[in-house]
Image 1: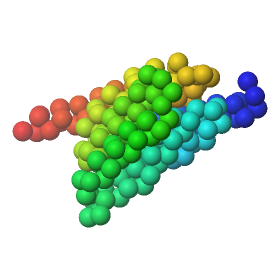
Image 2: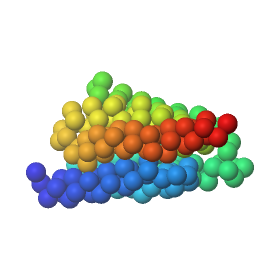
Image 3: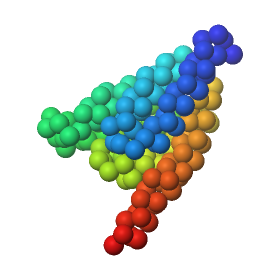
Image 4: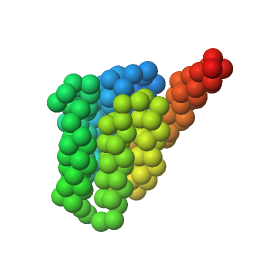
Length: 179
């Protein structure tokens, strides 16, 4: 591995840490804020290891996070944003097309876009979970494999399951007992 690839992989581990922490947050705003920081790190990670599709899609995710962290404000609540970012993901997938593998992160990013559009943290976590297997396969079969991305998706899936059990199912159980 070249020095820039090693640095890229280290930055990928930092990105993984930020992404995993995001799903343990209690509010939509903090979930998206940690994702924003992870996106910056993933852009650097993918750029340094030579993965253009991953870098560009995370660039889209960065801009998306800047808008979605402002949900609750009139301008950021416009449903056109959801369609704009889904369309941008498709355009980025088309632009970076190399082979069938490019479909995986494109679909994953669309799933995450829909997830972060949703306001309720429980549903954010559930929808975001659908993205992880797509990115996991993509990161695993990329050349070179994106180690930080692989770690992120494995730990994200575990983290999301824990967060759902800790924050969502427990909360629903308490609400049902109180009724």
